[in-house]
Image 1 (cartoon, rainbow, N blue to C red):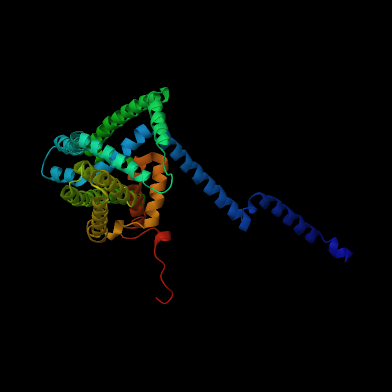
Image 2: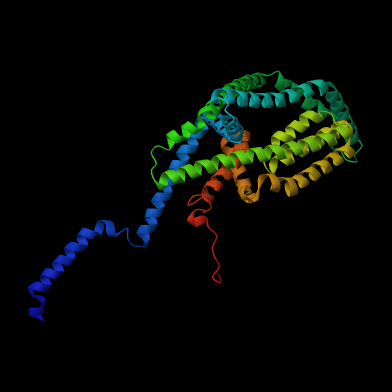
Length: 384
Protein backbone atom coordinates (compact mmCIF):
# COMPACT_ATOMS: atom_id res chain seq x y z
CA UNK A 1 0.00 0.00 0.00
CA UNK A 2 2.83 2.33 0.78
CA UNK A 3 4.45 1.63 -2.53
CA UNK A 4 1.09 2.28 -4.29
CA UNK A 5 0.69 5.62 -2.56
CA UNK A 6 4.22 6.64 -3.53
CA UNK A 7 3.86 5.52 -7.14
CA UNK A 8 5.25 8.41 -9.23
CA UNK A 9 2.83 7.78 -12.11
CA UNK A 10 -0.23 7.97 -9.82
CA UNK A 11 1.09 11.10 -8.17
CA UNK A 12 1.61 12.66 -11.58
CA UNK A 13 -1.93 11.73 -12.70
CA UNK A 14 -3.48 13.17 -9.55
CA UNK A 15 -1.57 16.41 -9.97
CA UNK A 16 -2.70 16.68 -13.62
CA UNK A 17 -6.31 16.04 -12.56
CA UNK A 18 -6.08 18.81 -9.95
CA UNK A 19 -4.61 21.21 -12.52
CA UNK A 20 -7.34 20.32 -15.01
CA UNK A 21 -10.10 20.96 -12.45
CA UNK A 22 -8.48 24.26 -11.50
CA UNK A 23 -8.37 25.41 -15.12
CA UNK A 24 -11.96 24.35 -15.82
CA UNK A 25 -13.46 25.78 -12.65
CA UNK A 26 -14.28 29.35 -13.85
CA UNK A 27 -16.53 28.36 -16.75
CA UNK A 28 -17.56 24.85 -15.78
CA UNK A 29 -19.94 26.39 -13.22
CA UNK A 30 -22.15 27.53 -16.14
CA UNK A 31 -22.41 24.03 -17.63
CA UNK A 32 -24.77 22.50 -15.07
CA UNK A 33 -28.50 23.18 -14.62
CA UNK A 34 -28.07 26.19 -12.34
CA UNK A 35 -25.50 27.65 -14.70
CA UNK A 36 -27.87 27.42 -17.67
CA UNK A 37 -30.64 28.95 -15.56
CA UNK A 38 -28.33 31.81 -14.67
CA UNK A 39 -27.48 32.40 -18.35
CA UNK A 40 -31.17 32.49 -19.25
CA UNK A 41 -31.84 34.89 -16.37
CA UNK A 42 -29.11 37.25 -17.57
CA UNK A 43 -30.49 37.10 -21.11
CA UNK A 44 -33.99 37.89 -19.88
CA UNK A 45 -32.68 40.80 -17.81
CA UNK A 46 -30.85 42.21 -20.84
CA UNK A 47 -33.97 41.89 -23.05
CA UNK A 48 -36.18 43.51 -20.40
CA UNK A 49 -33.67 46.33 -19.96
CA UNK A 50 -33.58 46.98 -23.72
CA UNK A 51 -37.39 46.96 -23.92
CA UNK A 52 -37.61 49.29 -20.93
CA UNK A 53 -35.16 51.67 -22.62
CA UNK A 54 -37.19 51.62 -25.83
CA UNK A 55 -40.43 52.25 -23.94
CA UNK A 56 -38.85 55.08 -21.95
CA UNK A 57 -37.56 56.70 -25.14
CA UNK A 58 -40.98 56.24 -26.75
CA UNK A 59 -42.71 57.99 -23.82
CA UNK A 60 -40.21 60.84 -23.78
CA UNK A 61 -40.40 61.42 -27.53
CA UNK A 62 -44.12 60.95 -28.17
CA UNK A 63 -44.19 64.19 -30.16
CA UNK A 64 -41.96 62.42 -32.70
CA UNK A 65 -42.69 58.71 -32.30
CA UNK A 66 -46.50 58.91 -32.53
CA UNK A 67 -46.53 61.01 -35.76
CA UNK A 68 -43.87 58.66 -37.13
CA UNK A 69 -45.98 55.56 -36.43
CA UNK A 70 -49.16 57.15 -37.80
CA UNK A 71 -47.32 58.23 -40.95
CA UNK A 72 -45.89 54.71 -41.39
CA UNK A 73 -49.32 53.08 -41.04
CA UNK A 74 -50.96 55.55 -43.43
CA UNK A 75 -48.14 55.05 -45.94
CA UNK A 76 -48.71 51.27 -45.78
CA UNK A 77 -52.47 51.78 -46.22
CA UNK A 78 -52.02 53.93 -49.34
CA UNK A 79 -49.11 51.93 -50.76
CA UNK A 80 -51.33 50.21 -53.38
CA UNK A 81 -52.51 53.63 -54.61
CA UNK A 82 -48.92 54.82 -54.99
CA UNK A 83 -47.94 51.57 -56.73
CA UNK A 84 -50.87 51.83 -59.14
CA UNK A 85 -50.00 55.42 -60.13
CA UNK A 86 -46.30 54.58 -60.55
CA UNK A 87 -47.19 51.66 -62.85
CA UNK A 88 -49.32 54.05 -64.91
CA UNK A 89 -46.31 56.30 -65.45
CA UNK A 90 -47.25 59.04 -63.00
CA UNK A 91 -44.10 60.76 -61.66
CA UNK A 92 -43.31 59.89 -58.06
CA UNK A 93 -43.58 63.48 -56.83
CA UNK A 94 -46.96 64.05 -58.51
CA UNK A 95 -48.31 60.72 -57.22
CA UNK A 96 -47.17 61.64 -53.71
CA UNK A 97 -48.82 65.06 -53.84
CA UNK A 98 -52.11 63.59 -55.12
CA UNK A 99 -52.17 60.88 -52.44
CA UNK A 100 -51.18 63.26 -49.65
CA UNK A 101 -53.83 65.80 -50.65
CA UNK A 102 -56.40 63.01 -50.68
CA UNK A 103 -55.45 61.96 -47.14
CA UNK A 104 -55.55 65.56 -45.88
CA UNK A 105 -58.94 66.15 -47.53
CA UNK A 106 -60.41 63.01 -45.95
CA UNK A 107 -59.14 63.87 -42.47
CA UNK A 108 -60.19 67.51 -42.86
CA UNK A 109 -63.67 66.51 -44.02
CA UNK A 110 -64.15 64.30 -40.95
CA UNK A 111 -63.12 67.14 -38.63
CA UNK A 112 -65.31 69.65 -40.47
CA UNK A 113 -68.36 67.37 -40.24
CA UNK A 114 -67.99 67.09 -36.49
CA UNK A 115 -67.48 70.82 -35.89
CA UNK A 116 -70.22 71.91 -38.29
CA UNK A 117 -72.86 69.52 -36.95
CA UNK A 118 -72.06 70.32 -33.30
CA UNK A 119 -72.24 74.07 -33.87
CA UNK A 120 -75.42 73.72 -35.91
CA UNK A 121 -77.31 71.65 -33.34
CA UNK A 122 -75.66 72.67 -30.10
CA UNK A 123 -78.37 75.13 -29.01
CA UNK A 124 -81.15 72.56 -29.48
CA UNK A 125 -79.19 69.87 -27.70
CA UNK A 126 -78.33 72.22 -24.84
CA UNK A 127 -81.96 73.21 -24.31
CA UNK A 128 -83.08 69.58 -24.50
CA UNK A 129 -80.35 68.53 -22.09
CA UNK A 130 -81.38 71.25 -19.63
CA UNK A 131 -85.03 70.21 -19.91
CA UNK A 132 -84.09 66.56 -19.44
CA UNK A 133 -82.00 67.44 -16.39
CA UNK A 134 -84.93 69.31 -14.83
CA UNK A 135 -87.20 66.31 -15.48
CA UNK A 136 -84.63 64.08 -13.82
CA UNK A 137 -84.51 66.31 -10.74
CA UNK A 138 -88.30 66.39 -10.57
CA UNK A 139 -88.43 62.61 -10.79
CA UNK A 140 -85.85 62.26 -8.03
CA UNK A 141 -87.98 64.44 -5.78
CA UNK A 142 -90.90 62.01 -6.17
CA UNK A 143 -88.95 59.09 -4.75
CA UNK A 144 -90.11 57.84 -1.31
CA UNK A 145 -86.69 58.47 0.23
CA UNK A 146 -84.51 61.57 0.41
CA UNK A 147 -82.25 60.86 -2.51
CA UNK A 148 -81.29 64.43 -3.34
CA UNK A 149 -81.95 67.67 -1.53
CA UNK A 150 -82.16 71.11 -3.21
CA UNK A 151 -79.43 72.32 -0.87
CA UNK A 152 -77.07 69.70 -2.26
CA UNK A 153 -77.79 70.80 -5.83
CA UNK A 154 -77.09 74.44 -4.95
CA UNK A 155 -73.86 73.39 -3.25
CA UNK A 156 -72.72 71.47 -6.33
CA UNK A 157 -73.53 74.41 -8.59
CA UNK A 158 -71.58 76.79 -6.33
CA UNK A 159 -68.62 74.41 -6.30
CA UNK A 160 -68.64 74.17 -10.08
CA UNK A 161 -68.88 77.96 -10.44
CA UNK A 162 -66.02 78.45 -8.02
CA UNK A 163 -63.86 75.96 -9.93
CA UNK A 164 -64.55 77.64 -13.28
CA UNK A 165 -63.59 81.05 -11.90
CA UNK A 166 -60.55 79.78 -9.99
CA UNK A 167 -56.89 79.90 -10.94
CA UNK A 168 -56.85 76.09 -11.17
CA UNK A 169 -59.30 76.20 -14.05
CA UNK A 170 -57.18 78.87 -15.70
CA UNK A 171 -54.07 76.73 -15.46
CA UNK A 172 -56.05 73.86 -16.94
CA UNK A 173 -57.08 76.09 -19.83
CA UNK A 174 -53.43 77.03 -20.39
CA UNK A 175 -52.54 73.36 -20.38
CA UNK A 176 -55.28 72.82 -22.95
CA UNK A 177 -53.79 75.50 -25.19
CA UNK A 178 -50.41 73.79 -24.85
CA UNK A 179 -51.99 70.46 -25.80
CA UNK A 180 -53.55 72.04 -28.89
CA UNK A 181 -50.15 73.47 -29.87
CA UNK A 182 -48.56 70.04 -29.44
CA UNK A 183 -51.32 68.49 -31.54
CA UNK A 184 -50.80 70.98 -34.36
CA UNK A 185 -47.03 70.41 -34.22
CA UNK A 186 -47.47 66.64 -34.32
CA UNK A 187 -49.94 66.94 -37.21
CA UNK A 188 -47.54 69.02 -39.29
CA UNK A 189 -44.71 66.61 -38.50
CA UNK A 190 -46.89 63.62 -39.41
CA UNK A 191 -47.83 65.13 -42.78
CA UNK A 192 -44.17 65.91 -43.52
CA UNK A 193 -42.99 62.39 -42.61
CA UNK A 194 -45.87 60.88 -44.57
CA UNK A 195 -44.79 62.86 -47.65
CA UNK A 196 -41.30 61.33 -47.56
CA UNK A 197 -42.62 57.84 -46.78
CA UNK A 198 -44.95 57.97 -49.78
CA UNK A 199 -42.34 59.44 -52.10
CA UNK A 200 -39.16 57.62 -51.04
CA UNK A 201 -40.41 54.71 -48.92
CA UNK A 202 -38.99 51.91 -51.13
CA UNK A 203 -35.58 53.62 -51.35
CA UNK A 204 -35.51 54.16 -47.58
CA UNK A 205 -36.21 50.46 -47.03
CA UNK A 206 -33.47 49.44 -49.46
CA UNK A 207 -31.04 51.67 -47.57
CA UNK A 208 -31.94 49.94 -44.29
CA UNK A 209 -31.39 46.52 -45.92
CA UNK A 210 -27.80 47.27 -47.00
CA UNK A 211 -26.14 45.54 -43.99
CA UNK A 212 -27.95 42.23 -44.74
CA UNK A 213 -26.53 39.53 -47.03
CA UNK A 214 -27.75 36.19 -48.35
CA UNK A 215 -30.54 34.56 -46.39
CA UNK A 216 -30.57 37.47 -43.95
CA UNK A 217 -31.40 39.85 -46.80
CA UNK A 218 -34.16 37.56 -48.08
CA UNK A 219 -35.68 37.28 -44.61
CA UNK A 220 -35.48 41.05 -43.98
CA UNK A 221 -37.16 41.81 -47.31
CA UNK A 222 -39.84 39.20 -46.61
CA UNK A 223 -40.49 40.72 -43.18
CA UNK A 224 -40.73 44.23 -44.64
CA UNK A 225 -43.17 43.17 -47.34
CA UNK A 226 -45.32 41.31 -44.81
CA UNK A 227 -45.36 44.29 -42.45
CA UNK A 228 -46.45 46.69 -45.19
CA UNK A 229 -49.16 44.34 -46.46
CA UNK A 230 -50.46 43.56 -42.96
CA UNK A 231 -50.62 47.18 -41.81
CA UNK A 232 -52.16 48.29 -45.08
CA UNK A 233 -54.76 45.50 -45.16
CA UNK A 234 -55.64 46.07 -41.52
CA UNK A 235 -56.17 49.81 -41.93
CA UNK A 236 -58.11 49.51 -45.19
CA UNK A 237 -60.28 46.69 -43.85
CA UNK A 238 -60.96 48.48 -40.57
CA UNK A 239 -61.79 51.72 -42.39
CA UNK A 240 -64.28 49.91 -44.63
CA UNK A 241 -65.91 48.16 -41.67
CA UNK A 242 -65.99 51.43 -39.72
CA UNK A 243 -67.62 53.24 -42.65
CA UNK A 244 -70.35 50.58 -42.89
CA UNK A 245 -70.93 50.80 -39.12
CA UNK A 246 -71.11 54.58 -39.22
CA UNK A 247 -73.55 54.63 -42.16
CA UNK A 248 -75.82 52.02 -40.55
CA UNK A 249 -75.94 53.82 -37.22
CA UNK A 250 -76.35 57.19 -38.97
CA UNK A 251 -79.45 55.92 -40.80
CA UNK A 252 -80.95 54.72 -37.52
CA UNK A 253 -80.20 58.00 -35.74
CA UNK A 254 -81.70 60.06 -38.57
CA UNK A 255 -84.87 57.94 -38.58
CA UNK A 256 -85.21 58.44 -34.82
CA UNK A 257 -84.40 62.18 -35.22
CA UNK A 258 -81.62 62.03 -32.66
CA UNK A 259 -79.64 65.30 -32.49
CA UNK A 260 -75.95 65.31 -33.50
CA UNK A 261 -76.48 62.26 -35.71
CA UNK A 262 -73.63 63.18 -38.07
CA UNK A 263 -71.02 63.82 -35.31
CA UNK A 264 -72.07 60.59 -33.61
CA UNK A 265 -71.68 58.68 -36.89
CA UNK A 266 -68.22 60.19 -37.42
CA UNK A 267 -67.35 59.26 -33.84
CA UNK A 268 -68.50 55.70 -34.52
CA UNK A 269 -66.18 55.62 -37.55
CA UNK A 270 -63.18 56.85 -35.53
CA UNK A 271 -63.80 54.67 -32.49
CA UNK A 272 -64.11 51.59 -34.70
CA UNK A 273 -60.31 51.67 -34.97
CA UNK A 274 -60.23 50.67 -31.27
CA UNK A 275 -61.53 47.06 -31.30
CA UNK A 276 -64.01 45.89 -28.66
CA UNK A 277 -63.83 49.06 -26.55
CA UNK A 278 -64.55 51.55 -29.35
CA UNK A 279 -67.90 50.09 -30.35
CA UNK A 280 -69.04 50.03 -26.72
CA UNK A 281 -68.07 53.65 -26.10
CA UNK A 282 -69.73 54.81 -29.33
CA UNK A 283 -72.94 52.99 -28.42
CA UNK A 284 -73.01 54.49 -24.94
CA UNK A 285 -72.54 58.04 -26.28
CA UNK A 286 -75.25 57.61 -28.91
CA UNK A 287 -77.66 56.18 -26.33
CA UNK A 288 -76.95 59.04 -23.89
CA UNK A 289 -77.67 61.67 -26.54
CA UNK A 290 -80.89 59.87 -27.49
CA UNK A 291 -81.85 59.60 -23.81
CA UNK A 292 -81.35 63.31 -23.19
CA UNK A 293 -83.03 64.48 -26.40
CA UNK A 294 -85.70 61.87 -27.17
CA UNK A 295 -86.35 59.87 -24.03
CA UNK A 296 -85.59 56.39 -22.81
CA UNK A 297 -87.60 54.56 -25.49
CA UNK A 298 -85.49 56.01 -28.31
CA UNK A 299 -82.36 55.38 -26.23
CA UNK A 300 -83.19 51.68 -26.02
CA UNK A 301 -83.87 51.58 -29.76
CA UNK A 302 -80.47 53.21 -30.40
CA UNK A 303 -78.80 50.57 -28.21
CA UNK A 304 -80.56 47.87 -30.24
CA UNK A 305 -79.40 49.44 -33.52
CA UNK A 306 -75.79 49.65 -32.29
CA UNK A 307 -75.83 46.01 -31.14
CA UNK A 308 -77.38 44.84 -34.42
CA UNK A 309 -74.88 46.72 -36.59
CA UNK A 310 -71.92 45.47 -34.55
CA UNK A 311 -73.14 41.87 -34.72
CA UNK A 312 -73.56 42.05 -38.50
CA UNK A 313 -70.11 43.61 -38.84
CA UNK A 314 -68.37 41.13 -36.53
CA UNK A 315 -69.97 37.98 -37.92
CA UNK A 316 -70.22 38.73 -41.65
CA UNK A 317 -68.41 41.83 -42.87
CA UNK A 318 -65.18 41.72 -40.87
CA UNK A 319 -64.23 38.09 -41.69
CA UNK A 320 -64.64 38.81 -45.41
CA UNK A 321 -62.72 42.10 -45.47
CA UNK A 322 -60.08 41.44 -42.84
CA UNK A 323 -59.48 37.74 -43.44
CA UNK A 324 -58.72 35.12 -40.85
CA UNK A 325 -54.97 35.52 -41.21
CA UNK A 326 -55.07 38.86 -39.39
CA UNK A 327 -57.66 37.82 -36.83
CA UNK A 328 -56.19 38.11 -33.35
CA UNK A 329 -57.53 36.44 -30.25
CA UNK A 330 -59.68 38.67 -28.03
CA UNK A 331 -57.24 38.19 -25.13
CA UNK A 332 -54.33 39.39 -27.29
CA UNK A 333 -56.37 42.42 -28.39
CA UNK A 334 -57.23 43.36 -24.80
CA UNK A 335 -53.60 43.06 -23.70
CA UNK A 336 -52.44 45.13 -26.69
CA UNK A 337 -55.07 47.79 -25.99
CA UNK A 338 -54.07 47.98 -22.34
CA UNK A 339 -50.36 48.32 -23.12
CA UNK A 340 -51.01 50.83 -25.90
CA UNK A 341 -53.28 52.95 -23.69
CA UNK A 342 -50.75 53.01 -20.85
CA UNK A 343 -47.89 53.99 -23.17
CA UNK A 344 -49.63 56.38 -25.58
CA UNK A 345 -53.16 57.14 -24.38
CA UNK A 346 -55.95 57.01 -26.96
CA UNK A 347 -53.49 57.22 -29.85
CA UNK A 348 -51.57 54.29 -28.36
CA UNK A 349 -54.80 52.30 -28.11
CA UNK A 350 -55.49 52.96 -31.81
CA UNK A 351 -51.97 51.96 -32.87
CA UNK A 352 -51.61 48.95 -30.57
CA UNK A 353 -53.74 46.46 -32.51
CA UNK A 354 -52.32 47.08 -36.04
CA UNK A 355 -48.78 46.94 -34.64
CA UNK A 356 -49.59 43.67 -32.86
CA UNK A 357 -51.11 42.29 -36.08
CA UNK A 358 -47.96 43.28 -37.99
CA UNK A 359 -45.73 41.55 -35.41
CA UNK A 360 -47.82 38.40 -35.65
CA UNK A 361 -47.58 38.58 -39.45
CA UNK A 362 -43.78 38.80 -39.19
CA UNK A 363 -43.74 35.68 -37.02
CA UNK A 364 -45.86 33.87 -39.64
CA UNK A 365 -43.22 34.40 -42.38
CA UNK A 366 -40.06 34.27 -40.25
CA UNK A 367 -38.67 31.04 -41.76
CA UNK A 368 -40.33 31.26 -45.17
CA UNK A 369 -43.15 32.83 -47.20
CA UNK A 370 -45.64 30.43 -45.59
CA UNK A 371 -43.47 29.04 -42.78
CA UNK A 372 -43.81 30.53 -39.28
CA UNK A 373 -41.00 30.69 -36.76
CA UNK A 374 -40.16 27.28 -35.33
CA UNK A 375 -41.60 27.99 -31.88
CA UNK A 376 -44.86 29.32 -33.40
CA UNK A 377 -45.58 26.27 -35.56
CA UNK A 378 -48.49 24.03 -34.52
CA UNK A 379 -47.50 20.76 -32.87
CA UNK A 380 -48.24 17.61 -34.84
CA UNK A 381 -50.10 14.94 -32.93
CA UNK A 382 -48.33 11.65 -32.31
CA UNK A 383 -50.97 9.75 -34.28
CA UNK A 384 -49.99 11.63 -37.46
